[in-house]
Structures are given as structure tokens and as C-alpha cells.
Length: 236
Image (cartoon, rainbow, N blue to C red; front, side, top):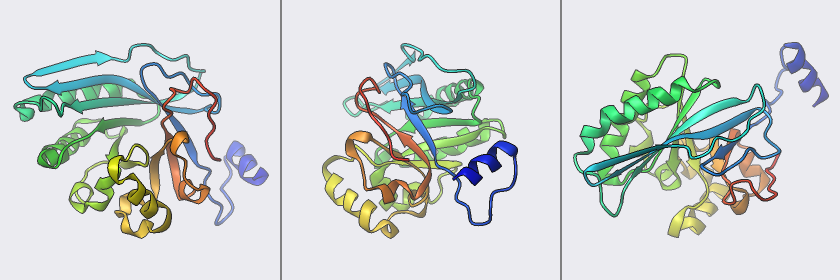
């Protein structure tokens, strides 16, 4: 560990076979403050867009968290498609969403921007084409991250053609199939789509997995149901 730290500080190459340390990234929604364990990275809600019926309601984050100098911020665009009043003429909202993502990217100093959007199977083709258009509309130096519902990890149609630089399966709040999905994640990860087995994933301290699960991922996003207002730690 000391060698890895000194090599990183000096800019030297890492020893052959040395593992990269995991990047731990808290998600900060409207009222969340930066947790004490986070020193370098945060994914912060930039804007919330609710598409409901014929309306589009847009609002920025309610209150900005206090951040130390040098914090790497990944702005998050949260797009909600109402299930009570499904959006009408969804295609007509494409330009709105692309513009919102471009503005979010302009606020990034991490080199990343993230789309947090759930879509029903009937909205899948729109979602896939939207992600493709977002990637094309963003500057080449900005990487596009997208969150993914856990069940998408068992549905290749969602992820095979997803034109994003990073997929972040959310291994929490998994709904009525939570028990079955947890068993797969913990004991049969080969059943998950390849983009859900390594790289990046989202976790919650309130629904913790065995340490070896998080250890598969080098970029770990963390959601806290108490908005980091209570003591909560994350695995190393």
C-alpha cells in the first residue's frame, strides 16, 4: 500500500499486477451534504426534469453542498418519466434533454457527466437512441455515465447497444425481485450482463453486500437514504 501511495504521488508507474485503488463517489441529491469520507469525488444532482403528460417540469438542485477546493464534481441529470401520467409525445422532448445534458457537462470538472433515468420496456428504444444522441452531442473530452436498473443487467436488449462510456447498475432499491437479484449479484455474477459485472456499480450503506461484491468494481457510487446526515461509512 505504501508503495502504491508513493508511486502515485511521484507519478511513477505502478508495480506490475498492482490493483488500482477504488474510486468512491457519493451521490448528493437535493439535501445531501458531502460525507466526511469523501475527499476527491462527488456526483451531484445538477437538474431534475419531470416529464408528465404534456408538461415538462424543470428545476435545479435546491441547495448546493459545501465542497472543498479541488473536488472533482460529476453533474447528474435526473430525468423522471411519470408512471402516473406517462409523458405524451416523448420524442418531442429529445432536444430539451440534450440541451440539459450539455449544460450539465459544462459544469463538470471531473471529465464525467451522468444521466439518471429510468425507462419502461415500451420506452426502451427512445432511451437507447437518446443516450446515443447525448454521447454525440457532448464534447469528446467528456465521458457519459448512465445509471441502470438492476433488472436491466439481465436483459441484453437494454445494454448491448447502449452508447455510454460507463454503466452504473444500482444494486439497491431493487423492488419485489430484490432477494433473487441479490443472490445473483453475490453468488452468480456471471448471469449479469458483462457491463454489470465489473467497472462501475452503485451501492447503498443501508443495503450492504459482502465486501467481495464491491471489490469487483473500481468505481463505486454510493447512495445514502439519510442524505449523509447520519454517520455512514463505506467499504474500503
